[in-house]
Every structure is written in structure tokens, then in C-alpha cells.
Length: 266
Ligand code: DHB
Ligand code: FE
Image (tube, rainbow, N blue to C red; front, side):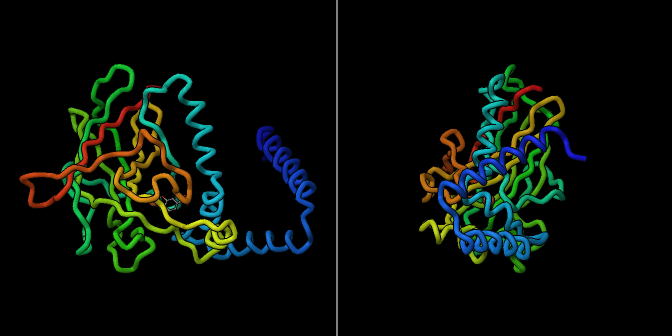
């Protein structure tokens, strides 16, 4: 059953589509190309590839929706960690892992291991929050997420962690590297048409949740990465840019990243 809100959304979308077609004087061939693009995206999509989302992302729609959502939420909570888009590579079945363990299993030779740690706090009281869950996922150095890459073990570079009684979390991951979003499909074709590159700056995805608090979907970006000013899916925000520093006295990790997260109460 359709909701009144959905009727309002679709009515507005149709109005704007008509205005757009009138203004640009859309031809039959151009309309047909649009139809073909939609069909192509549908045909390409499966459990491992969310091409429809990719198409909306390269035109900046997911990041715009994130911005609208964050703006609304932050009328009360402008002190919480900022959000960023989910992207197409999240999985709902991340295995829960021990604090201080690793998410990198078949680490490539060229990967640099990072010890990432921090505290999750209440944005208002600044108190540490025990029992918060953090989902983390990242691409390998070849630019592929585990589900895109036969050579990576299942759930490589992913995990779910729970903060301890001091609100602390920790894991070993890899220093992220810039990489192109999949461009052999309609999203890539769109980028070509617009004369744009497919690269994203180096990033790590996070979802942080705790009962009684607003959940945060976000990404953090390496301050030394290329493409920070030119992300193909427009996700970068200044407050989400982080600095990896050298780690001493740990044979497991060359770098470390201290990253504290602040949640807004409901
Ligand atoms: C997109 C987002 C990502 O985080 C990513 O790794 C690839 C693509 C996207 O928004 O399309
Ligand atoms: Fe990503």
C-alpha cells in the first residue's frame, strides 16, 4: 500500500522530470538511451554489485540525501561525528571480532597495516559508551572489496567490534588507498559522458550504533590521499579527514590511527 509521502515524492519527481524534458527538449533517441541505461543497470546488478546505487552516487544523489539527513538530524546534535554515504559494498553479516584483533587476513605484500583505536563517547555528556557496535569495512590495495574479489577470503577487511567497559575499540586494518569505482557499467558510462574520472580518495567505512543513540554511517579519509577534493561520489567532509601516524614498538603495524567517535543521544 502506498503512503501519502510516497505519493508526494513520486508526484514531485514526475513534475521535475517533465520540466527537465521540456527545458532540454529531450529527443526520442535520448529518451531511449536513458531507458537502455536503466535496463543495463538492472541487468548488471546482483548480490555483489549494486549498479543502481552506483549510478545515483556518481550523480551525487546519495551524498545529497546524506547531507539533507544530517542537516535535519543535527539541528539538535551538531556535535556528533558527521555522517557520510553508505556506498554499495556494505554487508549485513559482518562477523563479530575481538577487540584488538584484525580484519586483514590475506594482506597483500604492498599493504601497510594500521592499528586503529579510539573511544566512543556520548556527544552531550562526553562519557565513554560501553557496548556500542562498530561495523568496519574497506577495500584491499587492489581497489576491490572482498565480495568483488575471488582472491580474498570471505569477510576479509570487514568486521563488527563492540566497545569495552571504557568505551574503547581497537583493531588492525590496512591503510586505505585510492581506487576507481567499477566503471565497466552504466555508472562508468555516465562518468565518461561527463568527462569525469572514477576515483575515490582512500577511505574506511564505519557504522556505529548503540541503543538510545542515533546511529552513524560514515567514512574516514586519509589526509594524504589523492582525490580528497575530487571524490567521484562526493562523500568527503572536512571533519572526516584523518591523519595516520607512524606506530612505534609494534611489529604488527607500521601506522596507527586514533579516532574517537561521538554519538548523539536520541
Ligand atoms: C561508492 C562508495 C564507496 O565507498 C565505494 O567504495 C565505491 C563506490 C559509491 O558511492 O558508489
Ligand atoms: Fe568504499
